[in-house]
Length: 492
Image 1: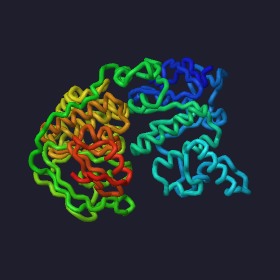
Image 2 (image 1 turned 120 degrees about the horizontal axis):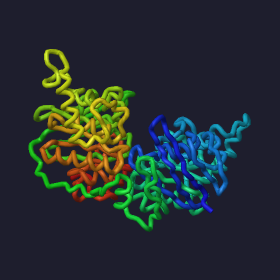
Image 3 (image 1 turned 90 degrees about the vertical axis):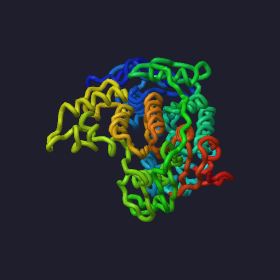
Image 4 (image 1 turned 60 degrees about the vertical axis):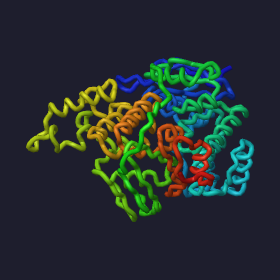
């Protein structure tokens, strides 16, 4: 008997069909992956299973009994718990207080007893964690274990994890995989949503692939490959090899000396960083989110003031910036594609003459960009808010690379993108490297950084704790540095 069965689930928003007659089932004690491009319907489907949305039609069965999941509370009562990519924790409270929050409303709360119960629960599942610790003092991997404990405490038997490894170090990913296997062995059923195919192949028993809101495959992992799954997701073959051609670095483009940068609270986030970058070179910056990467990128793009030190451009300072959050910083969502593409050049020829915008020139630019960057299913006058994440990122790329920049600062350029859009972004950046651009490539996706970089700098606590040769660095070396550890080959 399957633990969970979905039968012809359909959900639309206006004329847009997000889920189109989706059916699959998961056996108890198994780990089931949901794969799909951005906009394929994964999040909508999981929001239906967890009670956030109601399906227009179709039926959900738990242990062969039809159920109506009318709210998140109903889902919890039915034994369904969701762990989101962005944790729902109160940093100032302890582990125990976060876990019992909203459940134990007794005015005579026996915290000592709760500490004991949660300590025993964590040990029984191999989730070793101090129940008295403040959440804000815990590393990201430990905070995720608190989220898992929170739903186990509520006696969830079906766990839904949405991109659970996006903010973890390689060691924390290994730990999570071990924990999920233990949970499955104990009889829990797990839905694992990820765009990291190797993790799916390593961890999961079965997989459902969605494309354009429909199921295109239900497979046993033992009967498929990463290449087949990638092709099913995007409808074409994906080349996982970046085919990075050898480039001899040219003149120095950028020198950074003893740089210090403060975050939005005024606290030093970048501390005494120094490096040089040459033409035709990609400096990858690896690290767990929140170690000063955002502040460094903003400083290099000249949108954040320096606290101390110097950033020197040896040639012209024509810099492209691909920001971390395309929706908040990279685009004006209410503007159409054509308008977004000239945000940096609307006062210049040919887009402006005698203070008047030149409509035809703007339209021509948009038409050529849509073709060159394969912005799919889009017209020049469509609002960028209507585009998928991948197409939005292509609009940012088209605008930022239009003037052949000398320096490109790419901050999480593939965050939230599926394998097809990721391939497009990376291949385009490699083309810019071949042209002679110097590139700073910042990502928490270690495999990406290692594949694309000529040198890899590892950030921890606002500092470069190691700079390694991109051709010889190992995952173990970089992963150790990302977690604050030491390695014999720290600086190259």
